[in-house]
Length: 125
Image 1 (cartoon, one colour):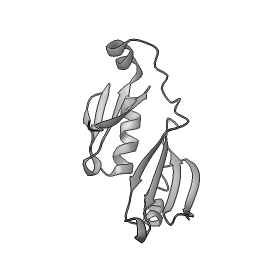
Image 2 (tube, helix red, strand yellow):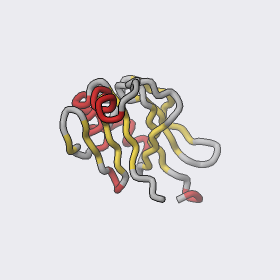
Image 3 (cartoon, rainbow, N blue to C red):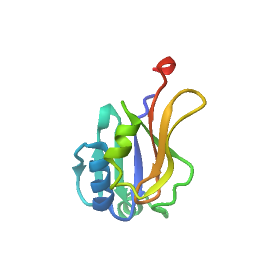
Image 4 (cartoon, rainbow, N blue to C red):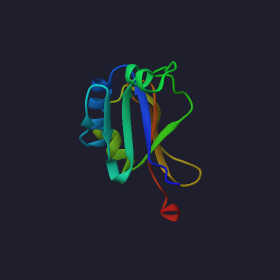
């Protein structure tokens, strides 16, 4: 088995795609109902609620994630904090050293999905 990608459901694919293009400094491929990003080999997909309901049925609730965190390893957490300062409006944790040695910051995308940028400690890298 291979973990393939994470898909976030949203009401506004173009808006969320624009955020992630700036955040990840990676272009997206797709359309107004579905896009993909491939930062560092992993895939992050964004899909419209309407497309998910059409393709899969059921009721999809965009922007309702309150438990999963997207984790991105970066070279310098503080430099990334400065770079995305005007992009992010919902900060949950400013850069800090964690008890296990990682340096980390936590924030939300425009739909409220939590994102962690971290640098592993030398012992964990």
